[in-house]
Amino acid sequence: MFCRKEGLPVFALCDCNNFYVAAERVFRPELLGQPVVVLSNNDSCVIARSEEAKLLGICMGDPEFKIRGLLHRHQVRVLSSNYALYGDLSDRVMKILASHFHLFDVYSIDEAFARLDDGIADPSGYAVMVAADVLKCTGIPVSIGMGPNKTLAKVANRLAKKNGGIKVLTNDQQIRMALADFPIEDLWGIGTGYYNRLAAMGITTALQLRELPELFFKQQMSVQGQRMYHELWGRPAFDLQLRAMSAKVVSISRSFSAYITEAELLCQAVSNYAWRLAEKLREQRLCCRKLEIFLLTSRHRSDQPQHFPVHTHQMAIPCNDAHGIVPVVVRVTRMLFQPGMRYRKAGIVATGLIPESEVQLNLFTQVRPKYSRLSSAVDRINASFGRGTLRMASEGSDTSWKMKQNFLTRHYTTRWEDIVTVK
Image (tube, rainbow, N blue to C red):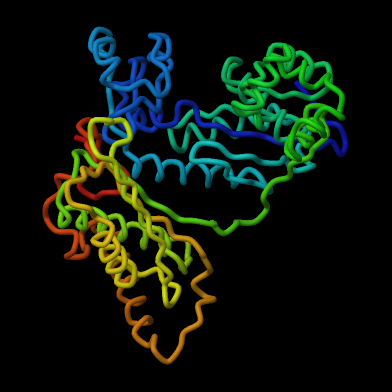
């Protein structure tokens, strides 16, 4: 057992194990012990694997069509991405974690950094308790790594996945042992460029990197690299984000299940995307001043003509309601569309974001409060009866463009008709 030294900061990284697979197993216990993979949009590539699937040699990013024979031979359970389920379970996990830490920073859908309160004398025992509470309340297993800063907490978390789920790095001897065999490419902040440069110098482990002089980091790496140097020596250089930061952009983009060659069908698709974008803006209480709309043909089809148009539209008044965003997106899409092209993907990016409370109206915008109330009413109805209960007529009824999700499971926690029934 480790007893914490007075005044020594302890950072924790809490990471859900194989999160997408774990979320599916919560409601489908028959998948426990079975090889499982989750596919990306349009059921194209592997984006999550169970431990059993990893042992079969299935790698992240493997295209489904290339490993279809392997999946069939080993009876691997294949699932489509169920983002509604993953997002809801992630929110539940984060709320439980936040209740155990005074300082808490969500890093991604399945990861969060935290800093232990000074009164906690036994971080290892505390981590065991937190992990057990998350598993009990959500069914999601988590690994927790702890160290004197965020970088070493992330190193500890990697080791925790191979050491029963909990790992605490407390002194320089333990840190040296952890870094001695830690691959440099797995170190937080080392991208492909830095990895190639360091590997050419014979630097392959985190400990070798730490032993380089500080001057090397100053001359060869960015400010982030210099901070990494201090963190590898146990000195905190990255603090937690103690308050929610406003997003700089909000975007939505999807690949179509089949090529779109008709302007009307393309407008129906982007209308659906624009509706969802407006929802995301309202969820974060933000309004956008600019909309960037883009279309893509398939870059991988050299036998087909290519077209990658993009247009940025300046909104007259910052907006987050569908009645202001959808017509703009549809109008721009019609302008960008070029006959004879086979479009594979479209997207919308909202920029120039400001809090909706800071939007300044004028004499010509009396209609906006009416649309805001309408959007709020639509949000409440869709929250109660399921997304898509109410939508814009411009979305049409032809859904042939929608993502391919042939292996989609039920929305167990976000749709009334999908709630599990016990007989």
